[in-house]
Length: 304
Image 1: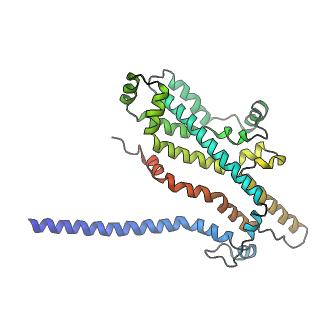
Image 2: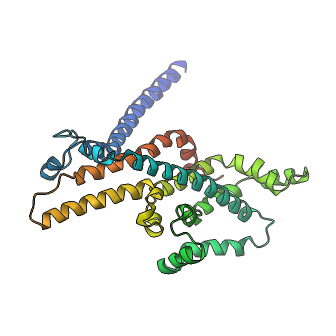
């Protein structure tokens, strides 16, 4: 009997070893496949314009060049200023957006709130129907006075209904007994919100916070709508880099139409260099939120 048990144990251990080898191999290959596009972007950013036009993108730069980065950092003060605006907008928008979204989710998840279904309807309705770009722009500029104001980069995308629904589902999974015991001890809504609801929703807050931060970090559309050319000191990073690329492409197009040799502006490598400059900091942020992000995505997938 002991011999049979030993054979089964060795068979299970060998099967687990084979499974671990196969799973690690598959995950390694998939990781390399996911890493390949970003590596192509980094490699292309260090290539020269001519080699990309003739031979396309390569894993190793054919003709190594830093002209694209030299062009981007030609005026480092403006680039650093754009970085500062983006960091401020991302930090302020993420913090304020998480606070307002989580408060709204807490109220809508409260079963004692009599009109929670009616109030929820107003949120859900905006995710299905919109007033259109022109009324939205007129409302923001004429009545809210967002024109040439840094608030225009924060408030228009402050609350997202999808993220509100995610946090609401987290709040609804908190046992009612915790709320009831806290209220029996004399705790008000603010105490329950800060001491019970938020600590138990850390994974959801980290997940939604990462999504909100990505929205703010990558946003350039609001800057294009609400900021004039004379307000370059308020340009966020994405819109600042987009302006550089647009002007570089305009110079090359004008040179081509005039029948003169193309300019020395490396527009193709600049696109890739801009991607590296713009995505670098947000990539460094992800490892600190990874454990919360994975838990936030998978929670609720299995319900008992």
